[in-house]
Amino acid sequence: SSAARPRHLLSIADLTPAEFTKLVLNASAYKTAVKAAFAAGEHPPKPLHGALTGKTVALMFSKRSTRTRVSTESAVQLMSGHPMFLGKDDIQLGVNESLYDTSVVISSMTSCMIARVGAHKEVADLAAHSSVPVINALSSDFHPLQTIADFQTIHENFPSRTPTDSSLGLEGLKVAWVGDSNNVLFDLAIGCVKMGVDIAVASPQGYGIPDAMRQTILSAAEGVASPGKLTETAVPEEAIKDADILVTDTWVSMGQEAEGQKRLKAFAGYQITNELAKRGGAKPDWKFMHCLPRHPEEVDDEVFYGDKSLVFPEAENRLWAAVSALEAFVVNKGKIL
Ligand code: CP
Ligand code: NVA
Image (tube, protein in one colour):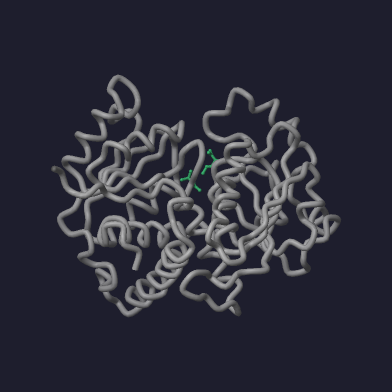
């Protein structure tokens, strides 16, 4: 018989509220500790040094990436491992070779696969046949590393809240997602439900949450004492009412370029601006978040570069989210301590 199956991170749905809370708090704690170590002239920084010595992490990307590639590669480096970047022209990933063969072979030589794929089934297939942990670096359905960084950002910017063992203490906050119902939204919504944060989604008719995904998001409430509520509308102002955090993403995700023009038309009126926030009745001290890359059609410069925007700390937090996930899934073999 073979060794115990590794634990994978394919979606925030894979985590209990306590585990998700831990991943976020660990990310935030490493950020503080490693920055302090660097500031004290500690090179390499003791808090992470040696965690992945002698280990190779395969970074398998079939799509472009700035943040996910730089954060995961830097995280492995900070932990003394070897990040092996494998772009779509470097290896066979879903082309010319089965994902079964790719998974068995790469997992026989490395300690982790971090994979960015098209259809979610591709990363699920890699995980099903891998002898090492697989971390989803964005699929058609989910983006768990982004959601960890997003909740770290919320945790760090609503500092009066006190975390417990099973939640970040963010209950009562409201997130408004105005834009496309996509991969980034789905894991964010699951995180909100688990953390007791209400999430209102405004998407144009035809661009809402698919039924099966809605079931997945709603089932994140199981076993949660006071789960966040999901509401859906096609009216941005309705979603924005009393929101603490306004969030959006591109209207044209990677792979949807052919429908780009049609999408830009469908999303007219969905651009996040200060006027929209005011008209919708967002809380006076609302904050703005976006996973990036950003285009001006979904949020104007005034909001994106304004004092309500958390987008650059949010992007930086991708590094600490990657560190936290690698520690939990590779160093601690899926025990989230
Ligand atoms: N937010 C995010 O995943 O960005 P990249 O596509 O640049 O990795
Ligand atoms: N929804 C976007 C996110 C990129 C980080 C995409 O899938 O292209």
